[in-house]
Amino acid sequence: MNVVGIIAEYNPFHSGHAYHIRQAKELAGADYAVVILSGDFVQRGEPAIFDKYSRTKDALAGGADLVFELPVRFSLSSAGDFAYGGILALESLGFVTHVCFGSEQGNIDSFLEVAEVLEREDNSGTEFQSQLSARLQEGLSFPDARARALLNIIGETDLDEPFFSMPNNILGIEYCLALRKLGSSIVPLTLLRDGQDYRDASNPSLMRYPSSTAIRAGISQSYTPHLALDDFSDLVCYSLREIMRMEADPSYRIPVTDLAKDLSPDIYGRIKNEMPDFIGVNDLVSRCRTKAFTESRLRRCLLQACLHIRETDKTMPYLHLLGMNTQAGHLLKDLREPDLDDHHVSEDDSFQVITRLAADLPRLSKDARALYEEDLFAADIYRQVFQRKYHVTLPNEYQQAPVTL
Image (cartoon, rainbow, N blue to C red; front, top):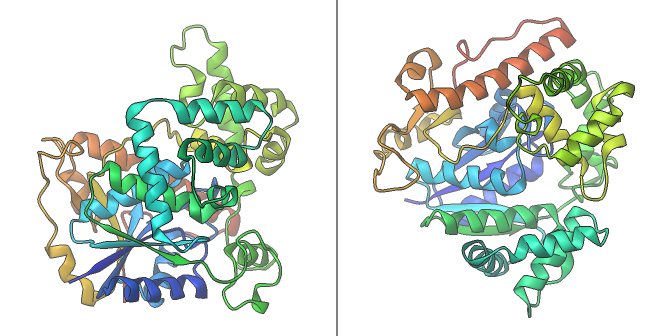
């Protein structure tokens, strides 16, 4: 039996995502599709436009069979950590045979070739980082510098610079690299992306497969209840002021740049200089961005500070089940016991699927519970901002049950 994994944000879910699920099952010859879904905060450094349970419901209606939440320490992170977390989640389940991702390339051999070179570079030296730093010093933007550095390391190849700077291709490379790092037997597949360009915000109704950017732009102008980055401006402002207060306290021992995992001294300096004129998160990001510091990285830094995300623990002791097609329920009974020979699993860890929080949380190890508290905090912040904006009351994580279809 084949089971295909998909790592997604579905922000929001649309017809192109349903197409991807159908094609992924066909390419893998799979009976079931398992989705690892970003929770309430996404990789581009924003709150999800709709909450994770609404997006799960849409994913199940669109063909997904099981939907698990990607922990916030991975979902609100760089492409490398996001991809690693998604692959680690699929590997932890033990029954996933394939992973399928969309790309602008559509040829899996290209991704495997680049991943092999990058793994060799990771194991042998720091050439990539040196090349990247050199390109950034030349004044290139981060995506262009990364593309040029990768091309220089790989050498003779049929690939061109745009291959390395397109967002789905970047994630595809990181997925294949994560598979190699984990020694996973999961087979990677890629589907050529079809439809509206991801950056195109024009009318999505004119497109067969619209972009999420265009759909979000339409939602932001509508009366549909949703959240946007500026809804978190008060919380972000408070978090930054707290960081600055700590910096001024000589008894405070933790470097301020350790209070958000992607926050560097240079980024912090720019943010600090602009804080006197703070009117909102989007405005602050616009004033702080440079070629080296992309808007997505700045947004992630600000939300990480707000949510107290300091580092990315590279283990996966639990997965939170967001929803399921009842016909796929038997897959959960086949979950493997932890392999203590695997260096990603310790004797204190026992992988667990969380379905009912009140019953399952006490079963987690102390370290796993501390990690899950980050997800609970992020979910509560999202829920309370939504409640304040729309003057409604929503169920908390203890009151939620997995969505079923």
